[in-house]
Every structure is written in structure tokens, then in C-alpha cells.
Image 1 (cartoon, one colour):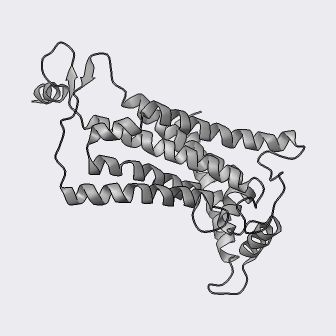
Image 2 (cartoon, rainbow, N blue to C red):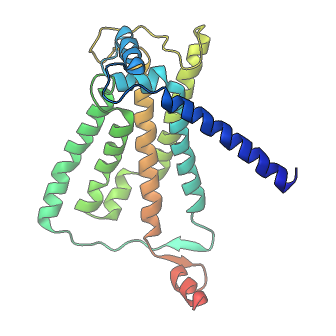
Image 3 (cartoon, helix red, strand yellow):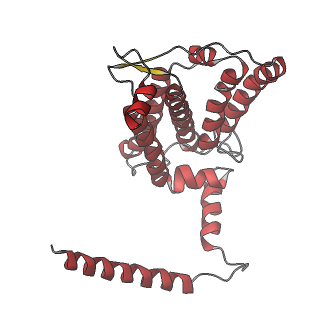
Length: 257
């Protein structure tokens, strides 16, 4: 296909999309009006399936397939980061030096660590009942672990967060979400169908598959965030080229100059 033909194809497609968007915009309900058809259907569906948090019902039930795409984007980003920032054969990391931390910072960071970790786990566990869920709680859990880096040093953080274990947790969370979706097919329904009993409304076991998918997201996001931070923190350490006697950064600067 010639360049001119590709441009014509792009122009026709762009005009078509613009016309569809314009038609949709003219048919939007008035601002501040009382007509909210999508919201009313979302609330009705969430209550019918005993999910108190409508947002979680949308994310993990009504539009669970969209959430799978969002989770997969994060998973792919972590995979790409691990590949790009991996240590090559002619490099090795220098162990970081121990840094003295102000006693007040150390004290409050160590107090905040278990509290923050508990809050993150609580938000994940109650995602189908109250605001929050696996995405938010997973980030909080990963952040809580790094308070040890602030309170003590990098070596202390490394002892409680082996990157390989959290990489496995990242993959396990992604796999659990897909397997739960496949279970809907085995149950005679569709992929990511809410096929489990809905339970008692406003309890931890309510919502059918919603709390399970939410937990899978929490594990995946927590593992992914820890691995990302681990790879970027490792880049802050001194990396030496093998057999050169100088640091990789110094060699790179010398080559540039």
C-alpha cells in the first residue's frame, strides 16, 4: 500500500470516529440532570449480586474483562523493567554503605510500618464493601515495606523483600485472575462470570467472585510495585564494569566526554 493510500485510509477512519464521537456528544444527558442510566444500572446490578461497593462491582464483575487488561498492562510493564534493568555479565553491584538514620525518623517509620501494612491489607480485604480495593491496597502494602528502607537502610529492606519472591507473587496474581475467569467457563457460563454464591450482603464473603478477583489484583499490584521499586533502587547502587577497575557510570561519562 502506498503512502498516499495509507493517508487516505487514516483520514477516512479519523473522520468516521469524529462523526461517531460528535453524535454521542449531542446525545449526552444534560449536566446536572436526573437521568443517569449507566449509574442506575450499575447500582442495581451491584445490589443484585450483594456487592456493597458499586465501584468494585464494576471493576471485578460488570467490567471484569477491562480490569484484566489494566492488570496485564502493569504485569507487562514490570516484565519489561526487569528485562531492561537486569544486571549484565560484566557488571556487579557494590553493596551500599550503612547510613545513620535520625532516631526520630527511625522511630516513627518503624511505628508506621506495621500500621501502614495493616491498612493496606484491610483495604484489600474490604474492597467489595468500602472504598478501595486491590489496586489501592496493593500499592499501600508495597509502600509499607519500604518504610524499613527509610527507618534503617537498604540491607534491611532487602532482607524482607527478596525481589524474586515478589516477582512470583506478581505472576501468581495475574494467573489467579485468569484462572478465576476460566472457572466461569467451566461452570457453564462465560469468561469472568460471577458464578459463585453471592453470600450475605455487606459481609466479607459477599459478592461472589468479586472478593477473589479483588484479592488477586491486590497480590499482583503489591508484587509488581515491590519489584519495580527494587529494580529502580538497584540502579541507584554503584555498578562496576567487570575487569575495568572503574565504575560503569564513570566509564560512560568518560566515553561521552
